[in-house]
Image (cartoon, rainbow, N blue to C red; front, side, top):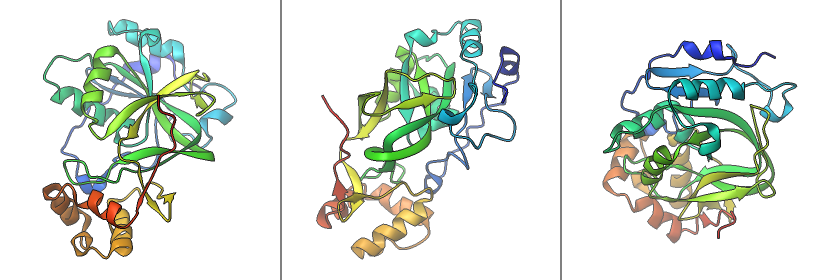
Length: 269
């Protein structure tokens, strides 16, 4: 299976940044992808047509780390050794989400950012028991022994990481060692550790068991309405998101009232 080469990194597609509809969160599309965010667009690092095999089962590296290093050098950006590898579980998996966060920062931020798909073990993704400002219920990781997922890990330099940290008020950024959360990158690397944004509020749960990420907010709202009987969660997802944006404590209050919160069981200092 061919991996991306430096010649593949010369054809960026424009970063389209329309307003993201909150009801469509997490905006990742049908599959996670490896990509390179550049000042003039996004370069897809995966082969055309995608890849069905999990990153840890690839016979050869899917993504060429040397090609990424060459592209970073060409852009005058920090090399990988000076970056922090952060595992994304929600919309941060997409270059367009990160590009919007950079654009909203009140200072100049280097744009060049590598995104590499990876296989992650003993981790799963659920929901924060609280809404984000636009009214959607965001994703959050939790420990799940035996689970295997394909996610995206992103290499941020110091300035980029400070910007992303500031956009995550519902989370603590934690460092997970390979012993707690084994990761195999599409570059073939198995990092000693990876950072992740973990919920400050636990995760939504049913009977003490975390509710896995619903890829449509409509599914989650319908589920929560069935568990709580709350009429304000009835209706089209866009309409419900609008209500929740005006009542940001509603989901958290309902979750506490009905016992719908569990610990994420991730190691904290």
